[in-house]
Length: 581
Image (cartoon, rainbow, N blue to C red):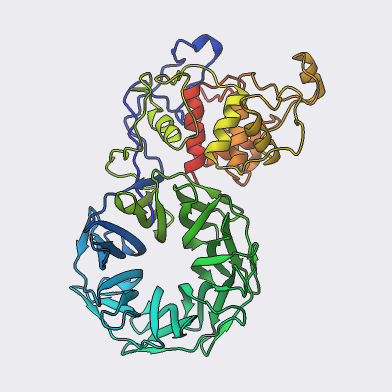
C-alpha cells in the first residue's frame, strides 16, 4: 500500500520554511522577490502516494490483491487478457527495488486470481477462479507459493460453479478463503473454505433470507476464533444490502450491518482488534465505510462519489481505504481516528486492494488504461527518487520554482489553473475566492447549492466562485465577516469579501479544518512562533498545522500570520494539508 513518492526541491534559495518552506509574500513582492536570506534545502521527503512501475503481459493486465511480508517481499495478484479475451493468472513480486512477473499456473480456458495472503516468504496463498473448458462453468482456484514456485492446490468445489474473491492467513495451518457458489441455476450462495495445514474443506456459512445472490467478497482474521467476512446480498425486487458474517470458533453467523439506500455493498474488510473492525464499499453513488465497535456495526461518514474496494488497518487511528471514483480517478482515503478524508494520489483508474506493513509503508494495486497499476506510500526518507510524471504542465513560469511539484500535482488533479494558458503567476497573491475554489476541489468536498438565493450579499449566483464558496461555507470550512468589517468594505452583512487577499493565518486555519486535524496546543501552552501568542485567533490552527508538518515559520522565529499568501505558497500549503496525515 504505500507508494514512495519523493519530491526533490531545487537547490535555489529555499526557506527552511515548510509553508512548506514558504517565504511570505506581500503586495510589494509581486515581482517575485522573496524576503530573508535562507539556508538552501537540496531535498525534502514528502510523504505521499506515487505510482511504482509494474509489468504487464498480454493485451491488458490488472491486479486485484496485494499482500505484504517485508519491505523487500510483497506479492500482487490478478490476471492478464489476450487478444482472444481469455485471461491467465498474473502474479507479481516486489523485491525491494522492482516489480517482476513470477510464473503461475492456469486452469481451464481462463483463470483469474482475486486475493492473496501471506504468513512468511515461503507460505503465500492466492485465490480466484477459472472457467472449465469442458463444462463452461466457473471453478474455484487456489494457488500456493512455497518459496520457489506457485502450484495449484485442490479444494472442494460445491455446486455447479464456485469462485473465490478473498483470502486471509493466520498461520500455515489456519487459512480462510471466501467467495460464492451456485447450488442451482439462478442462485448464488456464500462460500467459505478453510485450510488446516493438510487440506481445504467447506465450512457451512449462512445466507440472508432475502434475494438469491449472496457473494462474500473479503475476509480478515483477528484470531482463530474471531474472523470476519463481508459482501452483499440481493434484495428481492432490486438492489443490494450489505452482508457481514462472523466466525466465533465454532460457526459462522450473520451479524446485522447498516445500509445506505437500496444499493449498499461491502467489498473489503480489515481487522485491528475484536472491537475495532472496518468494512468498505459503496451505495452506488457514494463511498460506504462501516465500523464494528465490538457490539454493533455503524456507518462512519466518508467523502467522495466513489467505490471503495479495499481497506488496510494499521491502528485505531491509521486506516487506509482505496478504490475509484465514478469519474474514473483512483480514490484513496485515510482514517485518523476521528474522520475519513481523501488523500491525493497521482493516477487515473481504479485500485482494488491494499495492504500495510506499517504507517509508513502501504501498497495499493489495481488497473489503469495502460494495464496494471501499483501505488506505494512511504514517509521514510531514503535515496530521493524522481516524482512520477502526473500530466503535462503548461506553465512556463514555474520552472525552477521551489513549489513546482505542489503546483503540478494540484493542476493535474484539476484543483487549480493558471492566470492564462501558459502562466501560473506564482508571485501574485491569492484571493479568498480563488482559495475557496482550490480547497473545495482539492479536498473533493461534496458540491452544495442553496435551495434559493445566496448566503453572502457580495457573492451572487453568477459569481465565478459562487458554488465553491457556498460549498465550503456549508462544509464548515469557510466563513464570512462580521457586520463591522462588512461595513468597512462597503458591503452589506453577511459578507464574504471574496476579492480580498487571503493571509497566511487564514489559509492555515482553513486547511486545518479541511484536513479534519484534531486541534493541538503545545505542551505548557508555549507558542512555537514569536508573533502567534496563545490569544491569537490563529494560535491553535497554526500550532496544529506545525505539528503535522504542514507549515513552519521564518528563521527569526516568526510566522507572520497577517501577510498575504502568494499563489505558489498557497499551492504548497494545500498540498501539504492533503498529504500529511
